Image (cartoon, rainbow, N blue to C red; front, top):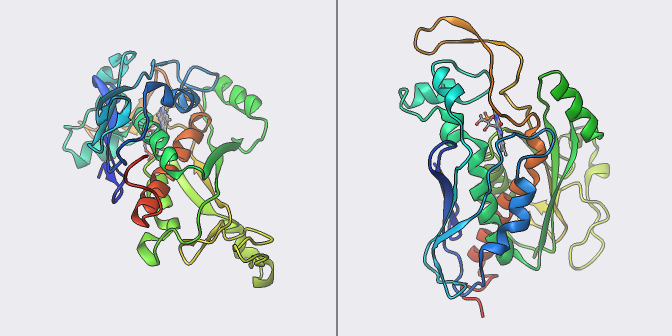
Length: 330
Ligand SMILES: Cc1cc2nc3c(=O)[nH]c(=O)nc-3n(C[C@H](O)[C@H](O)[C@H](O)COP(=O)(O)O)c2cc1C
């Protein structure tokens, strides 16, 4: 499904090399002040053009096509789209039968009987995350005064980000990265036991981001090696504030008054400039694939605002479900 959320519901549309990509947001409170300039900062953070990112640089100018009147949201579904102006499909057209190892090509070809748009990964492209970032800007307004901030901690196993990226690029290779996200100032009590736990919903939304391969909350996998006395967060105030935050701000699936904290593992980009063995999907024969075209050599460099966005989308929905945010802006 390309739709997520209960009240604050987002639906992605478009393909990497189609005319545009975008998002429809239903359930946004009416009366929220909103215009194109609100999106500038977060869209800029996701943009390509810097070292380690693709040379396909789109303007990423949002078109607010519905749900806005007189500079405020109307309560009707918001449609936001972005034109694809810099797509170049020539390499994909010439190699459409070749499955890029690590990419969606093979699985998508099988699932959709070859009808999927193969150009630039079609609907599986990281290009679609521009719509998520746009929805995140609106969700952050709902979540405010709580703050959400994600940062890139390391890439390719190194905290020297520039150097690791330079080295990978020099080798025609790619690297992954680790992003940490913290949401502070949340009320106690968001989330529901079991299937709508905050962990479940955040993980659900975070795994919608292409190239994400792991998530951990608080101490996460390190808690496996802790004892209970080391892992337990000693509660120090009536507001629930604890001395440590190994739980990542979630107890029983519910926010506990401490910072919500999670880390996301992003894999190395699959499209690399090193020849790889694959198959021709039409003939079934093995072949050597030499990928050209424009690619991010380190997707993690662009992903922090996307992680913030999906976190904000989940939290906005939970706040609206819990009636902790108004349905109408004053
Ligand atoms: C912001 C962003 C940019 C991306 N750029 C590329 C890219 O340039 N080349 C590529 O092969 N994959 C890129 N990806 C990853 C693919 O979209 C992803 O690996 C593919 O859809 C398969 O999904 P999976 O890795 O989750 O299995 C990007 C992902 C994101 C979030």
